[in-house]
Length: 341
Image (cartoon, rainbow, N blue to C red; front, top):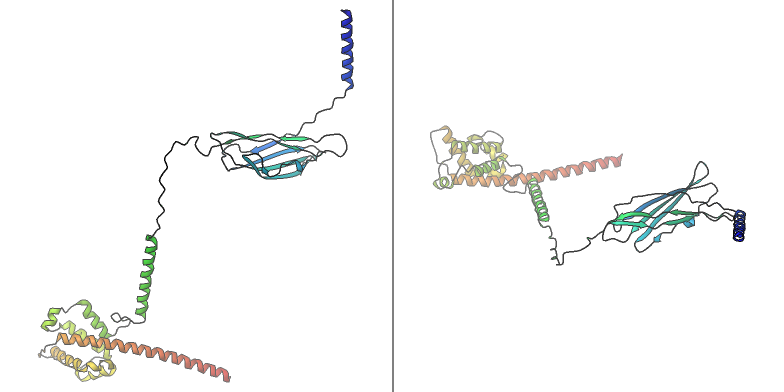
């Protein structure tokens, strides 16, 4: 018994001396990594922005080749982009920031937490010494992934195909009709400005205005014309007023010829106008009332209105030609004077 106890003491002494001779090497731990990432609200096709930051003590150099390359990570995750930024702190330590952009290519049946795999980085090994490179671990990051489709589809019958969209025909038709109306309005305005509308002259003369007044007011109906009744005094004075305006002066039986001199277009209606003027003059200033043929009077008024319009149109054309001719003469005179000078 004593012998066994002695051997046990010797063995204990030898083991304690052996452990005391072996040097203990201190273990170097990696720096703390701060990760910033939104961990919810993701579904199929979304991108995840993750930022990792850590500091390296003075004398340690980060190995940029340890940063993972862009590309597929597994069957449901890709690394779309990665950027590293290195800066110096005030104590000569290094600050490393790495920005990752992940994209999800998978989905789940129910919302659950999925983890981005851990990433191992390292520093460069020193040129001298047996110190090994320092390993830096970015821990796995979990995030909540939502499903795209419901877990089970209960509808088994096919829905009917939606009918094709109908072309909007009302709006183009409305725009077309509006453009057509504006075009017709502009055309009518151009015809009126050019005095091309027979029944609507731009600058009507007194006879034309008289004829328009008779046609517009309808003071004489077909029954009166058929019975050849007399004009009212107001109608007779209106005709006399139109004749006086055409002559440019007051008319009397002895000055009636001035009408045909100042308005030569009324020469063809001279017999009818003379008979009408004398008959109405007798009716106004004597007791001799003569019948005024309404039908014949309206006829020569209408013919005189047409003749007046044609005469005015021809005079306007002559006036325009004279204006152009005068401008041409003036221009030639100016050019000749400039050439002589």
